[in-house]
Length: 115
Ligand code: HEC
Image 1 (cartoon, rainbow, N blue to C red):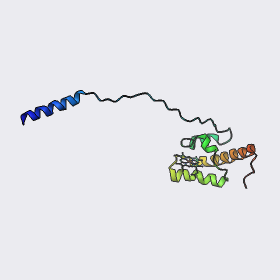
Image 2: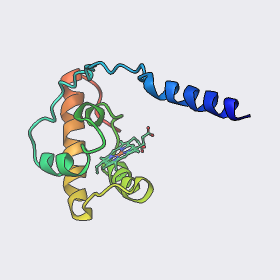
Image 3: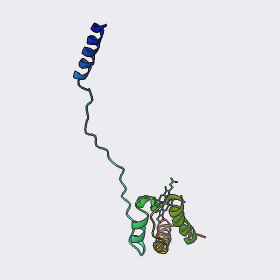
Image 4: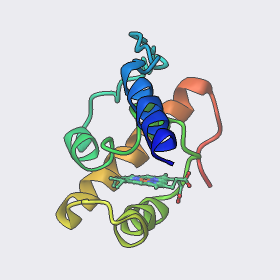
């Protein structure tokens, strides 16, 4: 019985001596480029401060073209549903900017104006 205990202890010690075989290597990841900057215009700062914490500028610029009312409700939805720290006082500027940017984008692409 005593012999068994000694063997067990020896095995336990042997287990401690073997170093863990874990090697850490440096890994670099490259995030996808997001070259699109928000164009200059009134309200740009409001969008940068309130929306781009969660959405990249390109995400903001690639949204379907919607009305001012819809942008208003989207901004409110961000606050209510996603708990976004959006300043309610900034919403009119955000709405104005998004509508203006989308109108300018539609002109560039030769798309028809929103109904
Ligand atoms: C706290 C993070 C956060 C902030 C800040 C935020 N959003 Fe969002 N937004 C989300 C999440 C989460 C979704 C849902 C994403 C999904 O469905 O994949 C979303 C979705 C959207 C969508 C997609 C359409 C929709 O109705 O779901 C639009 C457009 C949008 N956000 C605009 C905005 C605008 C404009 C602002 C600034 C006023 C803003 N977001 C600020 C988190 C945020």
